Image (tube, rainbow, N blue to C red; front, side):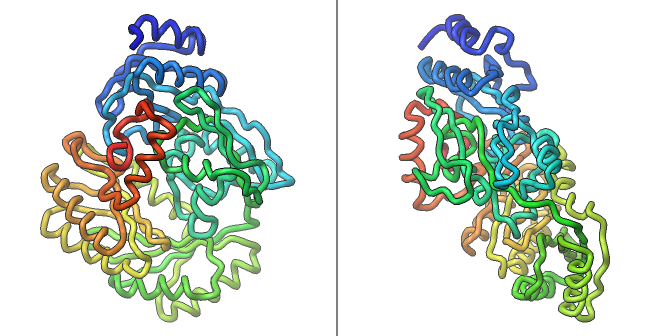
Length: 420
């Protein structure tokens, strides 16, 4: 292993001395303070800096906007942060082909603003869009309510460039929507938490901006009734873009539904919804209703955790029942925003010891029903709690892919499923 001074000199030679600095306390990852932060100006510099770290035997942690650095497990090692902050160009917006090529450090807000100039959008609504970067949301596979209509990021990405630990810039996919050449590296990198390679650029398929939008809401007395209405909506001919339902300890559930289109189309959809729901009262809401997931994430305290609960859409009532029963018995206050796809974002508040017990029991119940519970953010006192849960029989394959692409375990060691 090279000495500290030699490593810094080599990193400075690669990225420029002005782009290499000592890590500060705010650069810590789950309390682990790296030695250096490097902000390369090109993809080639980033790949070379990663190769330097790999050769020197030091651990590299990718970072975009830093909004989700505390997602996943604490790192086993963290010596070097490789930032994509300077890789923020929109390389090509092929608006006639409905595709965009963008560097990983570009923020979602900046990308959407540029696409909107041509009446287009990346049909994705992630957390903290003003700070979250393309590479970061891909690595964490974040997704919001638009997933119901447009799919997840794995459905929207059609090409990717990855910096691998050996210094290779690997490219996969293309710039057209129908592209089947080569191994599907874009989907492999999405959600891998930067443990296989560092995303340097991505190509996405786009969708037109809607002519208009309308949000409607309704409430029910209990989760069973809400589940029946949600399933009825999902089984109908309604062309809704998003559908979410909100629950909290001791409260009755309520739901929001989003329609997009022309005014005539919106009026017709609203009339059909009211007819389908019968005597259930329906209210027109502002677009602020779709900030509920963001509000949960923004309101965390030192004793609160943020988790992702997945379940079969037909199991919403059972999931809500488990939350109510376990939360009441263990004195855990919970709030949840659930999507009709069966994915929920939970905020959990309580004493540290009880919080850990609650997570383990809820995870066991979710897995028994074919779902999962992933802890996204946790209080400092729950550092030892595993974020991911049981990986099942997929772990050996995941480990083999990790060893193939990162044999020295250079990238984000320990952060991902099964300690990868």
